[in-house]
Image (cartoon, rainbow, N blue to C red; front, side, top):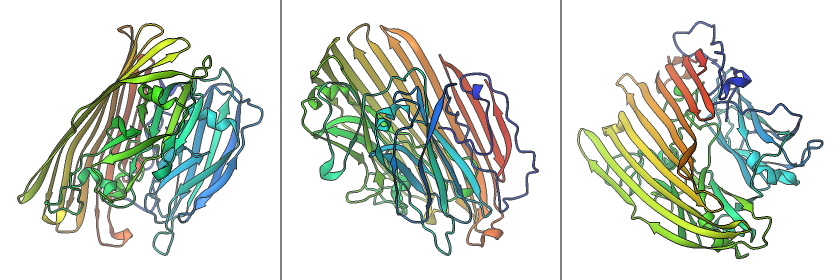
Length: 529
C-alpha cells in the first residue's frame, strides 16, 4: 500500500535508487492552524508494469451514515481476463470535523480492502490509498456485486462527509501466478467452506480489526477486573487470532496493534502521517494446506475465527475471511491427510501491582505445529506449518489515568516447509510489533502524548537447505504532540512533531523513505538507499 497525496516518488523508488522528494517550503507555524498537509505515508508505492491497461470505477460515494454503497462490477473490456497486475486505488476527501472511521470494499463477497480514514481539517484534506490486489484476479473475471461502507455520523457537531472514489486498473502482459479460486466464509451458522476437490494449496486471509469505539479498539491497554482502570478484560491485554477447521485449531496469530487516526487521545499525532497499516489494514494469513486432505471431500466444513482474550459476550472485533485456493489441473480429486497436530498450552499471565502508579505486567505465548500431505499429479507433497507467538507488556497508570503508559512487544514466528516434487522449500518469517508511549494530562489541562510504533518483519526462503531469498522490513513511527483539552478548537494551541521511516531491503533490492512533519507542515521527505 502507498498513500501518495501531497508527495510523489519516482517510479524507480521501489527496490532502486530514488531521488529525494522536495519537502514543504512553507514556514512552520508556532502551532496547528485550520489547515495542514494532506495525509501521506512513507510506505512504497505499488509498482506498475509498462503495458496497456484498462480502468474500471468500482465505487463512487459519499458516506454520511452507516448505509453501504451497493453497485455492480463488470470485467474490463480490451484487456483480456488474465492480467499481469491489478491495482486498487481509493481517492478520498473530507472537510470539517469528523472522527476516524473504519471501512471496507467487497467484490462478490470477497474483501479486497479494509481501511480507515484520516481526521480532516476545517478547510479539507485529500488522500489516496493504493493496493496490489492481483491475487484476487479470479474474482474479477466475472460480473459481481460490489459493497462498500465507511460508517459515518454527520450532525451539527460532526460535519465531515467522506467522499471517495475507488478504481481498479488492470495491466496486460504475462499473466501473474495467482490462486485459481478465491472463496469466502460466512459467519455464525453459515461459517462453512467447500473447497474444490482438487485443491493442493489452501491459504486463509483474515482481516482482523479491533474497533467499534469500545475498549477492544484499545485492546492492548485492557486490564483484569481487579485493577482500577477504565477498560476491562478478565484476561488482560493478551489477544490471539485463531482459525479452526471443524472445531480443530488450525492456525494462530498475533494481531497487529493498529492505532487509528484519533488514537491515544491525540489526533494531532496523526493528521498528516498515520500509524503503520492504518490506511491499508493487512490480513493475517494462515496456510491451511495441511488440512487440504480433510477439506477436499466435497462437503462443507466449518471454518471459524475467534479472538482469544475478548470478554464473553463483548463485541468489538471484525474478522472477515477470504480463502485462496490453488488447484491441481491434472486430477479431479486430490486426497490426503492431517499427520501432525501439536497445540501447546497457551500462556497468559497478567500480574497487577497496585500503588501510586499502578502496574500490569503481562506475558503471553502459544505454539502450534500442524502437518499434512496431499497426493497430487506430481507426487506426494507434505506441508508443515509451525507458528509461535509471544507477548510482553508493562502498562502503568495513575489514579484518574492522568498518566497512562505502555511498553509492549509482540512476536509472531512462522515456518512453512513444503516437501515434495524436488528439494524441500522453507519460508521463515519473524514478525515483531512494538508500542511504547505515554499520555500525560497536566493540572493545566494540557495533554501530551509521546509514542513510538514499530512494524518489523524478517523473511528467509531456502530450498534444499540453501538460502534463495530474504527481506527485512522496518516501519517505525514516532510522535510527540500536545494540546489543551476541554476548550474550543481554536483555543487548543496544539503542537506536534511526527516522523516515519519505512525501510525494506533484501535480495530484490532496497527501498528507504523518511517523512517528518511539524505542526502539520511536511518538513522532510527523503528517500533513497
